[in-house]
Image (cartoon, rainbow, N blue to C red; front, side, top):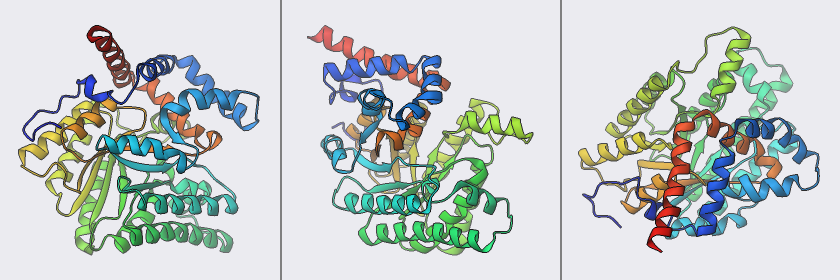
Length: 396
C-alpha cells in the first residue's frame, strides 16, 4: 500500500490488473474491442433483448459468457460472493445492485422489493458490502411516476398504487437502517426524476437524522443538477438531516436528447461535454467542502474527476478513509482507478450488479452504448489492458 504522501498513479497497470490472469486480460481486451463497434452494439440493443426473452437457443449462453461475465457479479447474491471476496482482498468495497428495472405488474414490483431487502440482509453479513442500490423503476410503474411528476390528479386506484411505491421504498430503507446498511437511490430519466427526488428526500428526512443511510443520485450531465445539489443541501440544513449525494454524469443521454427533440422541448442535457465536466468538478468541490454534513460518492470513470477529489482531500488534509468521502466505479470497468485508489488508502467501491441475464440486459445494453458514445474513456480502458498484457510479456 502506498504511503500517505504518495501520488495516485492511475496509469499503474501492474496494480490495476494484478487480480487478472493473462486469459482474463485477453478476454477483457476482446470484449472492449467488439464493444467499440457501433453496428454490433445497435444489433444487441434491437434484437438481443428479444432473442434472450424469447429463449432463442444459445443467445442467453452467449451473452452470459461475454458481456454479462465482464459487467455482472452473478445471477444471485451467493454467486457474487467470489467477486466480493476478491475485491475485499484488494481493500475494495462492494456496492450491490440488483439489475432489474422497468417492472410493471404489482406482483413483480413486490418481488423486486423483496429482492432489494434480501440484498440488504446479504450486505449486512459482509463487512465489505456497505451499500445496496435501489432503482425506483423496479418498484413502480413508470406511468404512475410520470403522472405524479406532471401533477396530474390520480384516481383512487392510482393513488393506492403510488402509496404502495412509497411503502416499498420505506420498507427497504427501514430494513437497511436497522442493519446498518446504506442505500443509494439511483437517478433515472428526467420525466420521472422529480418524483424519485421527492421520494428520496422523504427517506433522507426520515432516516438521515443521525448519520447518512440514504443517498440521492445527481446526474451532472443535466444542466440543472448542480443547482439542485445546492438546494438539496440547503433543504437538509434547514430541516436538520444529513444529505447523501452520489455524483454521476448520467446514463440516459441519447434517450434524453431524442425525446426532447421528438416532443419539442428543451433538452435537459448540457450542450457540451466541457460544461458537464465543469459542473461535475464543481459538485465534487461542493461536497468535499461540506463533508462534515454531507456524505458523497464520486461515482465516475473520469480520471480527472477522481484525481480532483483525491487532490482536494489532500489539500484539506482530510482522512483518505473518511466515511463521507468515497469513490465508486462499475464492476468490469475502471480498474486502473479503483485498484490504484484502494492501494493509496481511499474509500473506493465497485458497483456489483446481479440478476438473471434477461433481467440485467437493459443495464448491459446501456454499458455497451456508453462504450460507443464516450469513446475517449473506453478507448483508454482498452489501451490500459493492452499495456498491461505487453508489460507482462516484456517482464516475462
